[in-house]
Amino acid sequence: MIRFLKVTGDSLAPEYLAGDFVLTVKIPCISFKVRVGDIVVFEHPLHGTLIKRVQSIDSIKGTAIVLGANESSIDSRNFGPIRLSSFTGKVIYHFPRPR
Amino acid sequence: MYNIIAKLDSLVRFDHAKAHCDVPCGIYDPSTAQIAALTVVRMVDLMNDLEGQTPQKKVDFHNSMSRYIAVKEEHAEKAKREIRVIWGDYIKAQHLEKFPQLNGIVHSIMQFGSTSRQTADRESAVKFVDAINEFADIFWQTKSIATKKAQAPYAPALEMVYPDL
Picture 1 (spheres, chains in turn green, red):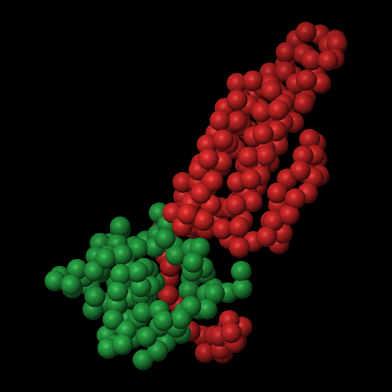
Picture 2: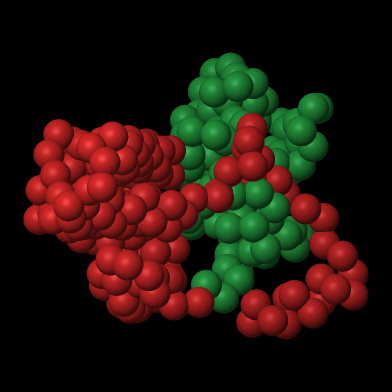
């Protein structure tokens, strides 16, 4: 299943900025396995739908470290590893707003 | 393509994916540092002007001179702090890869800023402004925003780098 999302916030700046759109594909999907470096969307119980980059994956524990691109980002540095099962999508296309 | 997606969004309202920060980040602008550095040059000019004058009373001379020095001190430090914040919080590894000269420019800014505090040397103060302009030019490039050079519309009317919005 594919899904359009609008990016808010600038924790992935300068690559992704508020107002950009992304096209995501639902995970798991045979053709779209999550890899280190992917931009993923996931649900967090406190922060809602978040978009971050996968920094590392622990296949045995079924978790991943996800980070934003700057120090102020709310990410695994704050809330720790994320369960792979919480991933709801992987970005397959990025539509940056005109810069 | 972006415009088509944006139009679609206005009709169906896509869900949001938050690239969340703990503070309202993304608000970085080197203009504060540029104005502070210009102020340093202005104070040096005023100090030199004052020295060339014959004061009515010695106390007035000292009063004005100490005020100029205090403002020079304050703004040199302010400019340095503003640059340190942008360099430390905004500049990332990918920026340094693209602009490998950036660390050297920041170091120069710190050095010229210190010299501007320690002395009343106009040349150092102007170099302070120039280095910050160089930093500003790169900063705006990291945001894909073009820059232009124009004379500051106030004394000391040095050539400055501005975002061409």
